[in-house]
Length: 244
Image 1 (cartoon, rainbow, N blue to C red):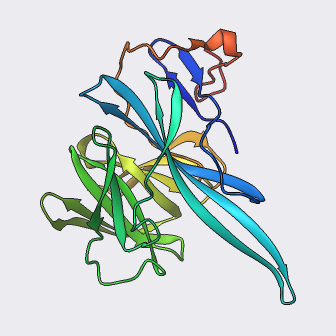
Image 2: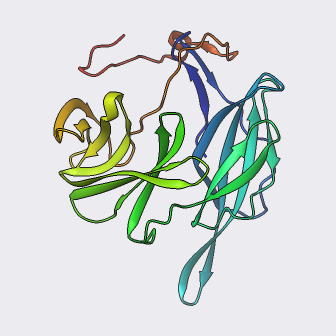
Image 3: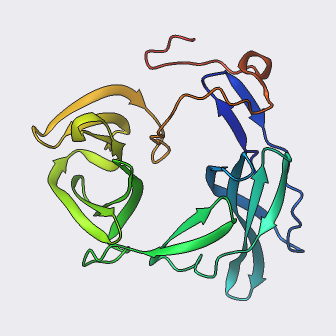
């Protein structure tokens, strides 16, 4: 399983997190993790990372190879610089619910999906921040002319608006100023879309399919007890190819 790391772009500090000491189930073939979350515990003044780990088993049967898995959830504390296992939420395998995690009491809770009149077999769902509230964008799995429905949670789910038939788009990534949307185009370029004028602006940033992410960033001088970027041989390369 790949290592996780913390990075503070303001201080240029970079910290590779230690290997987890959480015990894995016996006789697993390999582990995988692609779900990470960073949060702050205001009671203990601690930054924490929650990670879902999937332990895979492979069995040779007469019908062929069959894969099975066991899921674990583990939590890293920056203050203690260590990992621990936490309880797997009972609804983690239920794709009709949204999981949230409280960094203070270290407990999961659930939210229902918006009642959008379809199924997740037909649509993708992206969670994002919308003016400080939880937003959910739903869009069709198939086709290159995408339509987007934005739902916002404020006590209950309310459909905020719909954008019809945007050509040459793969998926939404997040919002910018004045309601503009960051999208991933069909050729995997970052573009900015203005729903009011329907203008699409290419931003000249490319990535592999479905690896592009938009992350809200607030400048902070909080130390993460790591090393400087140059000590880890990290080189910044902004759009355009120039190093920083």
